[in-house]
Amino acid sequence: MRAISYRALHTGDADAVFDAARESWLFTYATIFDPAFIDQFVRRHYAPDRLRLLVSLVADHRMYTFR
Picture (cartoon, rainbow, N blue to C red):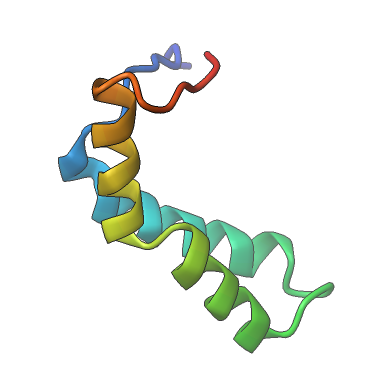
């Protein structure tokens, strides 16, 4: 088994994070939420443009995250 490593999110990761979020939400919550709700939620909260903005806000010390 390989060890898991973590690093800070980069702007170039945004599309992959969006895709992973959509896939994981559809799998995890398929019996709880309607697929349309999941799609809308992921598009709003994991939108690549939004993620790229968050990266720049953290880099500029205008927003903080916990590790």
